[in-house]
Image (cartoon, rainbow, N blue to C red; front, side, top):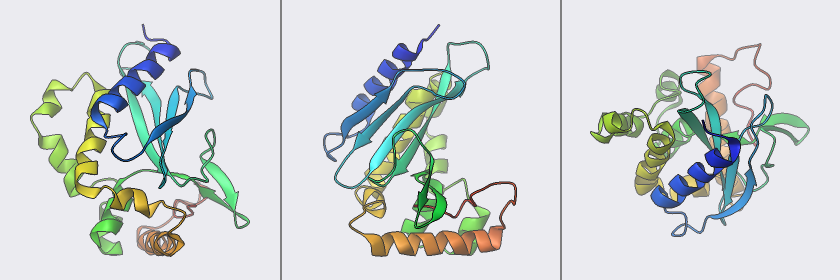
Amino acid sequence: MHNANEIGTDIAYLAKTYLSLEKWGFQEHWRLNELSDSKSPSIIYDSQWCRIKISFNEWHPPHQFQEYSIDIYYGRLCAPNDKNIIVWDNEECYCWHGLAKALHFLDGHTSEHTAKNLFSHDLIKEYSKLGSFESLAYKLPEWEIRKHAFIWREYAPRLFELFDMRRPDLWEQYRKFLKEVYDIKGRNPNIKPFLDHVC
């Protein structure tokens, strides 16, 4: 059975092993070793460009307490450690972000293409087809971290620069892109703030 401390230790070890943290200047900034209904083990790494949060997602299968999955999010340096939504310019917005839409933006894909492929990307599909996928089927944290390492080889440092607060012009282009994407895709009125409200 994994406990919260073991999960945090596992995540830190995998991040150090597979991500080029030192190469890109990422240093551990914050760690939470707690697992409850409202909190989960997480580690945040900061660089000159952005923040990366690696956190426990859920048990696989549920309630067995051995295998678990993680999520990896990217944030600007203003993103708080323990909140996903903040008020920015008098508007609630998401401050931690997944990868697929950012990769579409960096590739120069149209908003129409991105609206059809919101949660997928060719490079992510390519990674899933690699032979290592089957060998990591029961090692979900390692699989996810190695996926981001695979993406970094193609997109770093451009990916990190997207979240750089010193590049407000680039961030505004990204926000406009997301608005266009969700103008096409549509917005679920039950999800607030809307998913294109980012900061």
